[in-house]
Image (cartoon, rainbow, N blue to C red; front, side):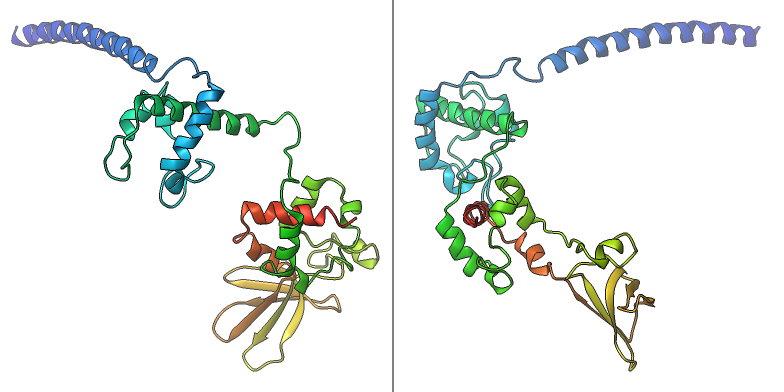
Amino acid sequence: MLHAAYGLMTGVESARMVRESAAVVALLVFFGIGAFAQGGPYERQRVDNAAADRGRAVYAKHCINCHGSTAKGTDRGPDLIRSTVVLRDRLGNAIGPAIRPAGPHQATLTGPEIIDLSHFLHQRVEAVASNRNPRGPLPVLTGDPEAGRAYFNGAGRCSSCHSAAGDLAGIATRIPDAANLQQRFLFPALRPSTSLGAALSNVEGRRGGAKQVEVTVTVAKQAPVTGVLVRIDDFFVSLREPSGEYRAFNRGPGVTVAVNDPLATHHELLDRYTDADMHNLTAYLARLK
């Protein structure tokens, strides 16, 4: 009898728990949908260009030193183009509270100034968003050719390997598309020549061409071995000698490896180029016809 009563009560309790669980789930679904529905504004803020122009002046006076000339941030301030505060803002309702005088924000802006600033930042967001999927090629000939010439012969050290009257003479005629020209010097590649090197271009480690990545391996007191680099990592290096013989070495104590990459300077420049450097250099090279 006790066991039967216990089983009956267990069944009743189970039914009650199922009903309560169903009610809780229904409430969670209801409030969950409500929470998602309040995730952000449904409509974009329509940018008032006149207000955006006034907001540009406000930005230049109070914000540019930390957030940069393009509002994409610096080491002193975050990117405002991707800021959730800016993206959710409508007519300053989020930007205003975020820039109240405190911490890094020392300026006190009026209500109209905050609205103008909101229009300017939304204008910048729209400009960036429209350029992500451009309908046509983005213009790259926006630099100063003379500044590009100075960079070529100076800080860029391009003239140490190249010459406007030598290997680069007529480069703009051979590569008339400015975007392709820019990509060619930003991300150059070693290409096989049209002679025997081209025939060997598919053979591992023998890509042909006048210049290739070479490596010299010295093991203890043995004579150094030099050839075209095939593969290198922290544990292993392999090369192909001019005779065509393949050589492989394990890296470790007593093994010295020296790599000679003709494009090493180009790779280093990628960490040093500014936007102005790239566009100025492109404008200069585009004149070499």
